[in-house]
Image (cartoon, rainbow, N blue to C red; front, side, top):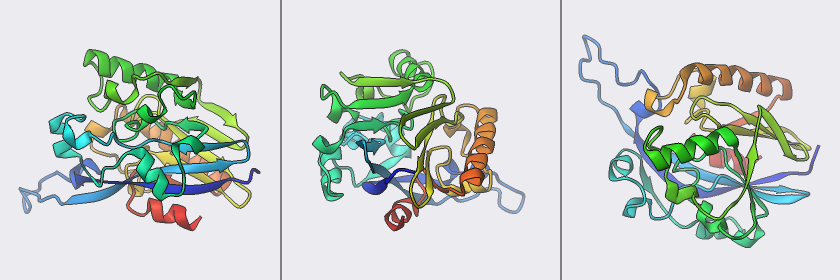
Length: 262
């Protein structure tokens, strides 16, 4: 196994209605005909993966101008991003510079995960993303048919794209990128086989851990294909079982601190 270290890069937080986290939260009953939802804080984070062959950045977070018109107003109203700063500033706080990054792995291209890609435009840094995700993102952003969570301004740059195909790729020794569609067509989990353990950066297969551990779907607006999502949960469960792996989901409140402890 490779000597791989992980450093969380804290990118602020989303403040969202808990009804987005679980599909059944908004259901009324005879005794509670008008259920009240809380708005909850969920972290946005990236991860610097120090590998013997490269320094890799997992995801790039939200665009720093999300609050100032880069995100559509209705999306920002629903998914309010507090603590926005440029990727370079948050990397610096974690002890890194943009120039330290050799490659980027995008779990998917939604606006809260791909908004920092512009920092790598024209740099020659390799950016890995699944071909299914890449195609769906461009169709969505350029035609308006698909998913409103893709913004051309996040990823339509001079980028050295490395398009993944199939269900698994291993671009670096002991790092597997496993396609787990459902939340989006080409979401990939990053499976890191380290000396001490195996860590799975599952991304938004689950917005929070309970989506995966309790098999509770997110709100339908956050699930592109529900059957694919359940199939992906089965595949993720198998990966976790076979490798006795630590799993981190995309916005679980505990995820950055758990990374610090690994």
